[in-house]
Amino acid sequence: MNALYYEGQRSFQIKETEKSALGKGEVRLKMAYVGVCGTDVHIYHGNMDTRIKIPQVIGHEVSGVVEELGEDVTGWKIGDRVTVRPLYPGVESPIDNGFKHIGQNLKFIGIDTPGGMQEYWNVPSFTLHHLPDNLSLKLGAMIEPLAVACHDVRLGEVKSGEYAVVIGGGPIGLLIALVARQKGANVLISEVNKSRLAFIKSLGFECVNPIEADLVKSVADFTKGAMADVVFEVSGVQAGVSVMTDLPRVRGRIVMVAIHAEQKSVDLFRFFWREIKLIGARVYEPEDFEEAIELAASGNLPLEEMITQVSLLADAEEVFKTIDSNPAGMKYLLEI
Image (spheres, rainbow, N blue to C red):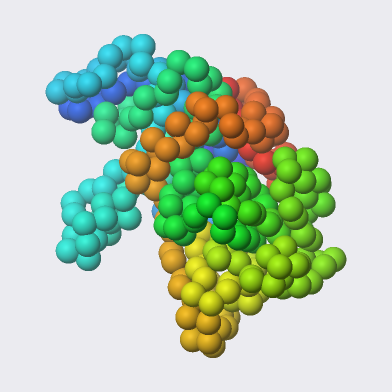
């Protein structure tokens, strides 16, 4: 079978390999599509070379079909169409407080262990979620990032009629906005890339470019002076962190979605002055995957429009180069 290996130094190589032996409790998938995640791009840039084992197959936004069942696998059959929730909890620690999806010994499948950019992939059966027949395998590869958005919106306790502001209109930011709007929220998206802004506006969202307009005033105008009930920080930059505390109303919420690897300056006075809540949100839980699948299958979200490009696995290195040169793109898929 063919597998795509990250070789370090912004390079990938297709290799012919043997199928791995199925372990107890594992399922072999015949892969269909794999999405390129922002984390995969970080790996491509060499930012995670100390974490992964080079050469390594990566990829965790996937869809596929069950090809073979390992020992002790129940509840699944050959031919089932599935996606993968790529978390291996490991041994539970007291510090986990029962939340295994972000446990201390968590392994992220596709980063800490081999991923889905290969023709056949062995995964633990407990990571699988059924894809309904009316959902294409192509859109099935969108479930993982959509589950991120469902988790973020759920932790943000978004309610119908509330005002939500999303700082950062990339793939995850847009998915958060779509899920929040589906919940009945009024959504404003802040984004600096003009091409992305044009696309987001075409989906019916209110938008603002904070380089060209005052974001705080824009939010005040959008909410008729009430300010935001919930703010999602998805930009990952200091400017987003600096402005996020100016946007919530009294007892509003801020959901920290972006990964900030370095400490950033935060206006803590605002948390005191308006009794603001700050909520961390990381990955997802099983119910978020089920909600994402239901939303995707409903046809009410423009997931197809979010797919910028579909390429063959052999062209993966060019896809990563394209992502670097086209920051306006949304979701890139590899067809396995």
